[in-house]
Image 1 (tube, rainbow, N blue to C red):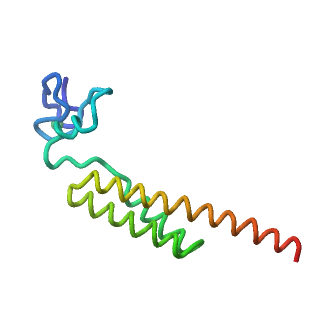
Image 2: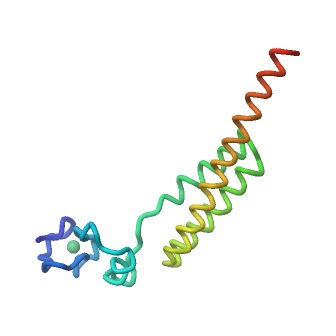
Length: 122
Ligand SMILES: [Zn+2]
């Protein structure tokens, strides 16, 4: 097998290119912990933290300030964790950010429905 990024030959059973650190085909059924044990120390799993920061800022601007801030704060924390190499903590914070965002959207939907009802009645 050859590295898709730099072309270095990678021995069978190795999940990361020894030259550039690019992820190779990891066994599908391997444990996550096992996967990270095989990862080089500086390997960072791509987490889409900036997307959630943007979503948080947008929802605080256009919808619900508190919910949007909650989303942004936790997404920013996750982004900091990724920078520090703490992927597990980053995932936790990203999960919380998503929770905030979903709650914000539900509240926004309820507010919208009530607003519509009041407009129809009133
Ligand atoms: Zn490589």
